[in-house]
Length: 420
Image 1 (cartoon, rainbow, N blue to C red):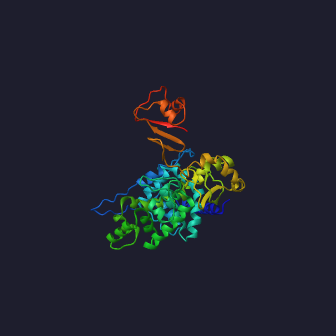
Image 2: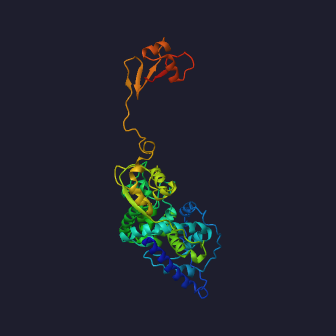
Image 3: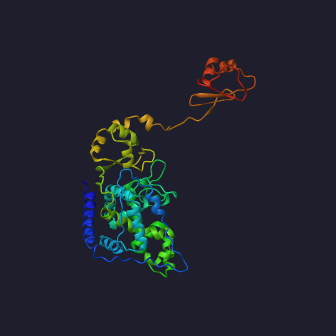
């Protein structure tokens, strides 16, 4: 088992045990209610739920068939469970957080179960990068709310990938984005870029919830909100002055962390989590098509696309080093059969782009030009097929065949193809 995956599962198991201890207090906990966030009498604080609704709507629930009825719990239980999570990022509780927790566990239990299964594959990637960059591990929940852990997710605004980078931001942090390659959808490279970006936001504000807010609406909007809040540098203090979507962003982040950690305690889709196969990433600088790899190694093309979502047209461009993710047990086969793979249907799949094209050349015959071995002759007044055939040293029947003519009638101004 992958060591990072093992770490994740151990952590989730520990959290479940902690939560079960909390649940043993259910009968003694008061059915208290957390007061909603106070609103300025001159301003209605609207929380935009679109980022949650749009993301959760993309989650495929086909494999989760069990309907789940989830009872609401006292606020004190939600609060205690959040405080039990071993996180650096603050996980406070209030009415907005509660609303988004219920959206996950009551309104979207099948989608949540699907996200949990995806987390088994993607969280080890996130944990590795976050750990190496000295960042809080709980930032792994950011792509949950950004993309529902779909590396091929695209927003209407043009953001893409697990971390939903805009093209300009992706390029700024070193991601290649062109017609063939979009590294915003590369789980490993986009996660590395996100770590650098998040670290810069934290260095700017010194607070993780403000860094998360800036990830959503930009540092400029966060600075404006801080100014309007008399310099207070706390998400909940600047909350009234943030855009409506950003007001919901941190609460959704907290709700995602709660829901993924405590889904089992809510009876959500208790089927076993699907484990992805072990994979390895190798480096290649040779142009190749995923279909070549698929058919020679017997790996489903859709599986290769899932493992390598950054190759928009299924082509690894070559010319410099690119990553190729394969099932671990097929890496040796790929290395051993690389020459066979690269030669398979090469002319059709990767050598089908012309490297050089002849320009049209004027012929010595008035009104004609040739390109790629074909001469094009513009018919003039008085021309006949016989005369043109004589001029180009061919037969009338050949001209008629080359041009799909059924009679000898021709019209001045039209163009004939002469394949000589």
